[in-house]
Image (cartoon, rainbow over all chains, first blue to last red; front, top):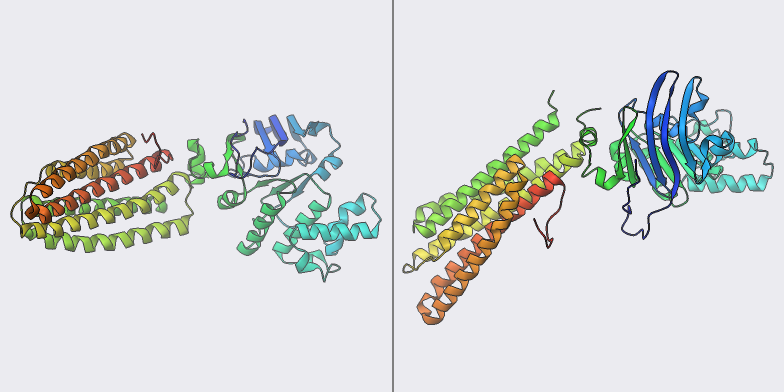
Length: 265
Length: 219
């Protein structure tokens, strides 16, 4: 689906460049197709929300973007996906996932690790031993995830001891520690209370200055609040892709209108 | 299965249309005070105004409650936004009707004066009000556009009446009080037509999501 031409904010002089593009993406599980040829351009330093009823393929789509999808036995994926000018399918998955990080629905800090160790896990796994670099990255990532002030005095405490909302921000900090250029979030607030949800939303709005965010959400108000662009998917197809503010006041497609006004789904 | 929210939106529409028809009645009887020189309708118009004021508050409350509880989007959101604005316009139509009736009472105390094109202004303004409400009820964009077009005639009639009365008042100082009263009534009728125009613009926004207010090419 072509990228909306309109600039999302009145202050932005030129539209942000495209950082990821998808053409003719088909994916599924075994013989069961889930995505039926999706085209999508993601603009840099924006939040793009993907909405749609359960089973429409939104999670499959973002899991294809960093090749988590292919980790499932029997999963199929074909089409063209570009990160900048590099083919996603030709990249080393481990390197790709450093550049395209992911945060999941349920906060999943490593249970045996402290807060600091959780954030530094990726660095340590990649052989970084420089303690000052690790400490610096931990602080920077926790600050970017808006968690530093709450945990700076207990960095050695277990990550799983934090509240649900804090654990989710810890997972975001862990993803940010790898300095990704794109952050994918799969319903990151569905297990959180409204206050913790609001914090994550504020965080997303702040970090988009530094990277590109793609978020799958069932919460349409959340999509409306945090994103510049919204994708509406239905039965493996992209029905509508446009500026969020337009889509939530004046959707072009009747199916989008019916979904966002709660008439189905 | 019909959603409760849809039933609530239908109820809101019905409330607005009831308020609108009450405003139409108010204009109708307020004008009778002036045209038929019949003071007996003033009390009714004033009583209806209190009713309209109550509905004004009630409709705003219902609309705000629906927004808070349902976080509407798209067509539902546009309907609620339009309903809140139409509600304000209708309440002001009621105010204008009261002004006409009360000015009519002053006119009754003076010798009769020609009303000129006032009956035609009444016809245009009442027609616009009725059709704007019909357009809202049916979501009829063509009718709403037609209402907007008719506002020019009302403005022209008001200017003509104004010019005629200024000439009359210059010639005959004893007609100044009555002339000023007629000018005020013409102004009230023109305002009613303006409110009907606003309602029609809100209907276009509600149906098409297109905001045509203040645009050079309005329709």
